[in-house]
Image (cartoon, rainbow, N blue to C red; front, top):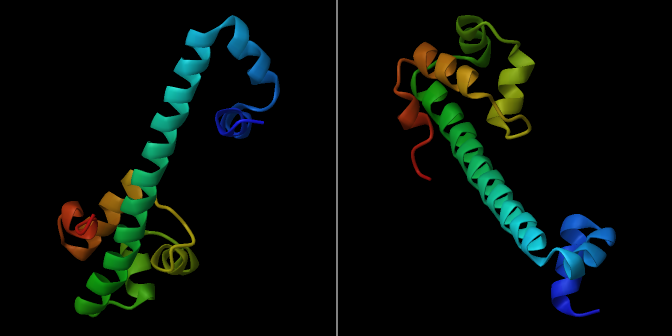
Length: 113
């Protein structure tokens, strides 16, 4: 199987290969959509990684324990710990609440991307 077909099979499954013969413009659109979604996922992942790293650093600099910050934000300590360790990805609302509790701009928490 040629490389292009393998990549398409991985993205859309084997049935889409038959669709390519009859609807080439649709296959191209699906490919572009897959690339856009993958790029968006990579960007979001980079933002979350940077946020998590900065969260711990700034929390310690402000001399907050995880318990104190979790209480200020109104979240469970275990969730905050998972955020700092990169095991959870916060929603934008939580990111904003954390930045307010730390008294720093949200941009500072995602700086470095």
